[in-house]
Length: 251
Picture 1 (cartoon, one colour):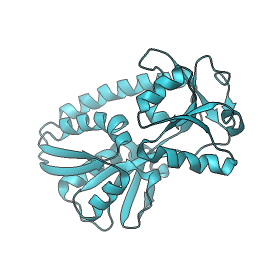
Picture 2: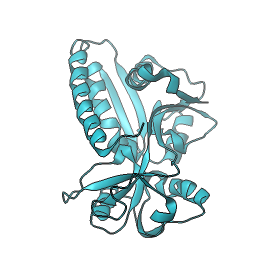
Picture 3: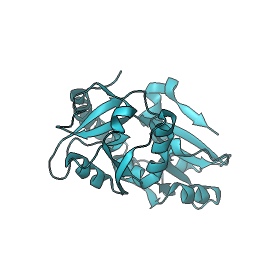
Picture 4: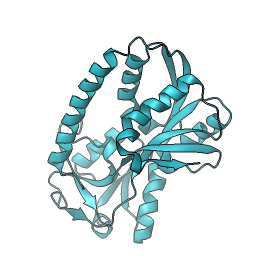
C-alpha cells in the first residue's frame, strides 16, 4: 500500500496521538533502576530526523541512564564501533555492509520524487526516470546521498541533470519549492512545507527505488552491558514487536 498525501498527513497526526499514549505509559516507569552511560554514534540524517523523539522517550523511561551522542560519518562510526569507542550506533543500515558489524534494521523509508506544487509532474500518480531526467535536479550530498542516488539512476541508464549540490536538506527543500529543480529523497526527511511556507508535492517513482533503511549497528559478537541491552530492547519494542515478519538482520 502506498499512502496518498492526505494519508501521510493523517499518519503524522496519528503519530502525535501515539506519542501522547507512550508518554502516559512511561509515567509509571520513571523509577526504573537502569543506570549507567551509553556512548552512541549516529549519522547526520539519523540525528536530525530520527533520534530526537526517541531520546526524549528514553530519558523519561530511564531517567538514570546517560546517553552520550557523537554525530559523524559512516566510516568514522564503523571504525569507532570496531575499536570499542562506541557501544552502539544508529545509522543508515542500507549504506553499510561491514563484515565486522551486526546490523538490525528498524525502519524502511521509501524514496519519492519531490516537486514544487505547480510542477508539470505534480499530481501524477507515477513518474519515470526518463521524465525526471529532463528537469534540473537538486542533489543532496550528506550521508552519502549522492553516491546512493547513482545506484538507482545507474540501472535506468540515465544521469540526473544536476544543477545544485548541497549538504543541507533544508536548502534542498527551499530550492525545490522555489522551482530551481526537483529531487528524490526519503519520506523520513520529507516535510510538506519549505521555510518560506511553500508546499512540496511528492510523486511515486516507477520503477520503485530502494528504501533508505535506519537501524542499529554494533561490533560482531560484542557482549552488551545492561544499559545497551535496554537501549536495543526499547527500539525492538518500538519498531519490531508489531511487525516481526519484517525484521531484517545482517551479521
